[in-house]
Length: 375
Image (tube, rainbow, N blue to C red; front, side, top):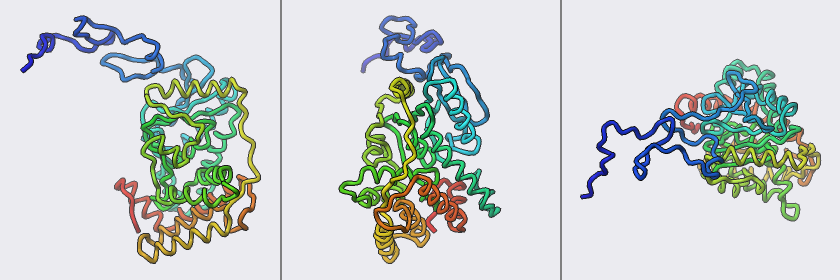
């Protein structure tokens, strides 16, 4: 048996103070290391009594805070539970981008605590849906989609700094960013199918764009098929590298292995985009889609799964509508559409699903228990 060192038995020994931590080797309190590598960590784990520069607040409300460290990169942080996205966050994003375009070179969306976002705040939409206010609900979804497009077409680069859960609407926001910087331990997915919905914040539209871009020898359906399985089964990538493999992250997105350096890298990437003369992408009007043939192929698979009792009828209804949007609608294979067409398809099918009793049962059950309902 090896005896404990003497300092452990000193009842009055203080291990952590605001000035540093006790070093047994030096038998003294030593400050936090000032090596350059640690300067990349703006918010390391604090010890007792320690605090860090929280930056200068540009504006703040109940849902978001826009701040900076005195440079030309603004940082937007959500303040909601699990950083969910409700009307307040949506309004805050628009206000933050307006401010960034006037006074900053770039903006980073980064949360002071995990997760990046657990998705849309469904509780905010339930009263509207329950009251059957279809037009009001459509306007809410259009506003959500418009926020994704505002991120994408901002005059200054908007970089998403992702760590932890990045689900649903949070995933859609990062898909529309100029670039995503993701910690390795990021869990990214479009999970709306689990509550009887489809991604309604522009996520499916963005997938169609990527499918058209990545099509090999013009075979858009080959790309769509892979995405369809990911979305319809509400799969969540178990790491940022897996998210790249499933194409929820782009090849050009950056993976950071030390999550404490996430903000540093995201700010550097945002500044680099600005320094390179960043210009937002032009709206696309020549997006090739899989069309009616793609829809028919997926429906055949779904029919077989239903007959084999692998899925419920409502599962098929949700998956069929996901397929319809991913294939660009029941139009001729190889047709070219624009982003607005895809957003319209996405929005209409999202609203129709939300108005279905079985979807409402799934949403209510998930909010009440935290678990999915198969009905």
